Image 1 (cartoon, chains in turn cyan, yellow):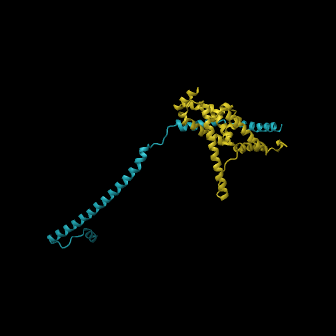
Image 2: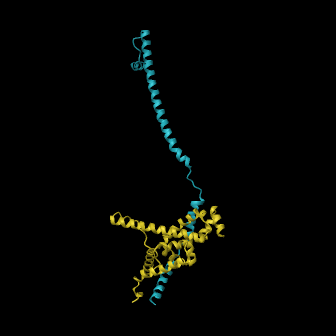
Image 3: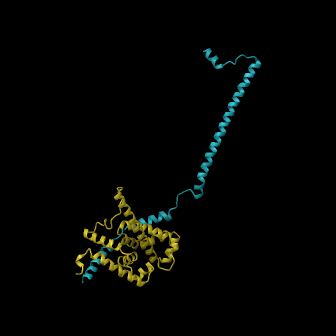
Length: 113
Length: 192
């Protein structure tokens, strides 16, 4: 007798649980999720090989930059050497033409003012 | 739309097939997940993952069972996994609160957000849910599918990949175990 009463009580609780209904708009939510996963084209642009070669390309560009920089620095030093050679040539020219001193044009202009 | 047509449509990523699948099975999937988890919001969230898994793994479906049985199998597995995750999370949260790192996160109590129910009804449902969760896994699955989802023994046997006799035995033992657990909460039904 107690068992059947207990069973009845249990069935009542189960009936309460079974009565719960999901959100009526849940189907729309699920469909939106499915569409975003399977029907919307992916916009993640870069294919796999691009993702691999991008860092390699950046590294190469950096190395190239360093090399170009060091080359430019060396060329700059050469230019200084040329300047020194030019000055030496002028000195020898002055000596051979017996010119005591090369006139500084800027000083002359200042003097005239 | 027949099952083979539906499967073919899903494999071709046809919108109408997706719509048909969701409209036909969403209520059953959510309700089954709810009966395992005891929380409707969790069950609704999980249902999205279940449908994504159904679509992703539809190519593995073999016609050894019906599509419905196969979907129920996925639902039961995902619900049990979610339950385990919740338990682990609950354990970590309790641990954090003991250590003193407790944040605002918490696992929702079963039936806590069912405002339509009275306090006693909520307590009774929670008590039943707790008692069901203490059952061995096979007994729990068989009992929930049969009692809550109204699945016949034969369908339960198909979903669980067991014989009919085994399912009958599981349900019988589940009822007996539940009786032992719940009778403590209802002293009026105790035998003298």
